[in-house]
Length: 421
Image 1 (tube, helix red, strand yellow):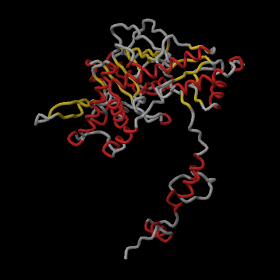
Image 2: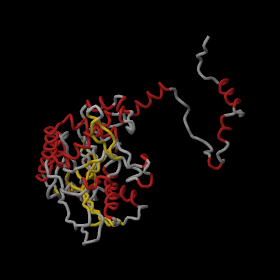
Image 3: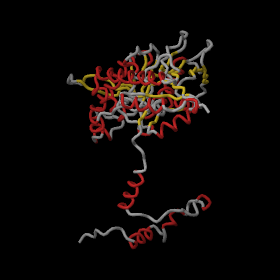
Image 4: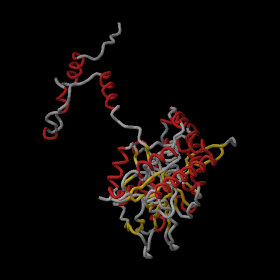
C-alpha cells in the first residue's frame, strides 16, 4: 500500500544520514561563523490558516480610500477589466522571447501592433517592441545617439523627471559619456539633446533648436499627443504605464524607443516584422534583434534592454479597446478635469505656476509638507512634492467633478497664511 504520510522527523534523519551528516546545521558549515547570524529573534511559527487570518487583520489597517492626484511618471488611469482577463491567460503570461516564430505568431503579432500604434501616435517611422520603462528608454536613446554621432557629450535639460535622470546617470556612468545638465546648451558640440514634454512641472515644452550634427531626443507623454502635435525629433521615447497598466506601487512598467528609419539599426532591443510565408499567408517574425542574447555579445545595441513583452501586450490590448476615438476622449477628459481643478484653486487664492499644461500642473501651496499632510488627513493624496513650496498635481479621467470639488473644498478651507509659517 502506498504510504502517503507527510514528511516526518525519521524521514529527515534518513535524508541527512544519506549525505553523511547528522543535523540540518551541518549543511551550512561551509559558511564562515562570522558571517552567520547568531540568533534570530522570531515569534513561534504559525500554521497557514492562522497566518492568513493575521495578515487579513493587519491589511484592514490600510486606508485604500484616498482620492488620488499623484503623478510624476506614474498615473492613476482606468484599467479595463478585459486587459487582465486576457493577459492572465497562460499563453501570454508565460511568454518571453519568441525565438521560434512558428509557434509564437500571437506574441509576435501583438508586438508588431504595439510598435505600429506607437509609431502612429509619436509620428515616427520605427519603434522597438518595448524596453523596461520610460527612464531606461531615455538612457537607451542616449546610448543610441552616441553610437550614431560618434560623439560622447550629451545635454539633458534640468526639468526632466528627476527619477529618470537618476536612472540615466546609473546607465551611463561606465560608458565614458559626459552628461551636461542645465537650461541652455550654449552651442556645445553634442551627440544629442534630451528634453521632456510635459516636463517635471507639467509644462508643455517646445522642441529645442539643434545643429546639423546632433540628435534631438524627446521624452513624451503619449496621452498628451492625442491633443498636441508630436515633436519632430530624431528619437522619441516614453513610458507606457498609462496604457492599461495600474500604478502597482511603481512597477512593472514599460517604455518605448522610436526613431527615423535611417536610425533603425541602432535601436535597442528587438523589432517584430510582418512578412508572408511560403504559402503566401501573413506571418510575423523577429526582424531586428541586436541584443546580447542573439549572439551579438559586445556588439549588441544594448545588454540590459530585454523587452517588457507582457506589459507591451497589455498596452496593445488597451489601445485596441479604446480605439482612436476613445484615446482622444480620455485625453480630452483628463485635460478638462485638470484645467477645471486649476481654475477652481486659482479662484480661492492659489497660484498655478504653469503657462501651458496638459493634465499635470505645479501648484504653489506655501508649505508643501504641511499642505500634503493636511490633505492626506482629508483622505486626499493631493500631489507630489517638488520643493518646499510647490507640488505637482496630476489629474486624469478618473478624477470626476465630485473628486475635484472635494479637493477644492479641502484646500480652500486651509489657511494659506498658516501654511506659510
